[in-house]
Length: 424
Image (cartoon, rainbow, N blue to C red; front, side, top):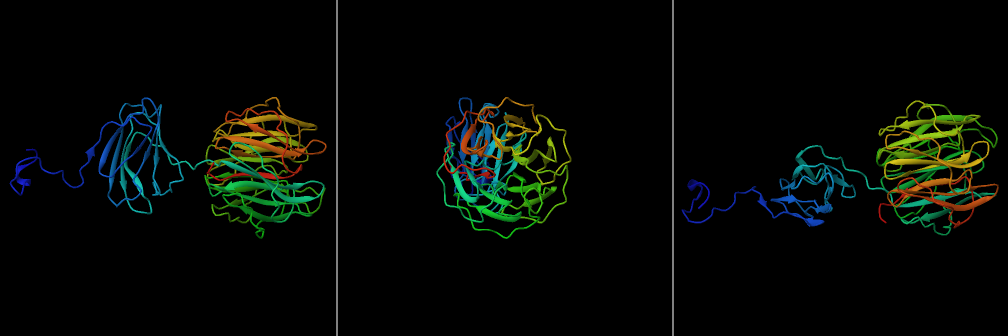
C-alpha cells in the first residue's frame, strides 16, 4: 500500500486514491497532434515532427495541464497550442501560440473566461501570441479615365477575381490597410477633390458604405497595419485641386474596430505618393515618395503607432510605388516613377532595414498597389504604363517577384489594396 496510513481513513488495504489536484502523467507523445486533458501531464517528443496540442474545449478555474519538452527538440520542431475556443493569456483562439525553445516546460492553469489558460510557469523564454496572418487580399477603387469604386478579391493562392460592383464613393489615390486582424479599411483619396471618408471591409471581403471622414482630407497617402490589429494612414497631398500639391506628414491611427482618430502632428519629411506596409509582426514602415523631387527616405512606426524621424534612404528615390508585407514579418517596396517608370524592388528586413535595389521583374509601371496574401506572400497589381493595366506580379515568401500574370478585372491606376481574412 502506498501513501501515509493516517490518510487511509477506511483502514483498507491497496493503493490510496490520488489526492485532488494531483497530476496523472501520460505516455510520451510522438504524434503531430494530441488532445490533452486537465489534471494530466504530458511529455511531448517532437524529434520527428512538430506537434499541435489541443486544450480542452471547456475548463474550470484551477484546472491544470503540464507539458514538457521530452527530448529538448521544441527548438527544431515547435509545439503549437490550440486553445480550442477558450482564451489563452487573454487572447482568443484565432491567435497563434507557439513554443519553440529547446528544453521548455509549461505549467498551464485555467484562470477563468477572461484570461483563460495562462502559464503559471513556462521555464525558458516563451513566445508571445502572434496574430494569424491574412490569407486573402482586396484591390479597390481607382481611375479608368473616370474614378471607380469596383473591387477585385484575391484568394489565398493569389488568384485575382473578376470585378465586384463598387460600394462607396468612387475615387483614386487613396490608401488601404488591414485592421482588426482579419478586416481592411480603404480611406481618403480624391473623388474630385480630396476626401477623408473611409470604407470598412469585412472578413469576407464585403465593402461597406462610406463612413464620414475624420482628419484632414488628402490623396497620395499610404497606410499600413501596426500593433497586430490596428492601422495607420500617413502623409499625402492636401492640395485642394489637381496640380495643387501641398505635402503633409500628418498621420491618423485606426483602432482595432476600424475607428479613425483625429490628426496626429506629422513626423518626418512631408511628402506624397509614397508607400507603406507592416514589418516585424507589429510595426510599420513608410517609404519613398515625392517632396517636389523623388526621395528614398523611410520612417519606421513602432507597435504603439508612433512615427520615427527620417531614416536616410536606401535605393532609388521614386514615387507612385507600392509596398506589401511578405514572409510574415518583412516588406517589399516595388515599381514606381524615378524620372522614368521602373520595376525595381527593395526588400525590408524584419527589423526595418531597407536593402539596396533589386533588378526589376515584370512590367515597369506607376500608381499600382500591393497587399499580402496566403499568410506569407504578396501581390502587386494594376497601375499605369502609359495606359491602364490590370496585370499582377506575385511575390514569394522569400521576396522573389514573378513575371507578369495576365490581368483580371478592369484596368486602372491610383487604386489601393490590403489583406483581409485569416481563413484560407
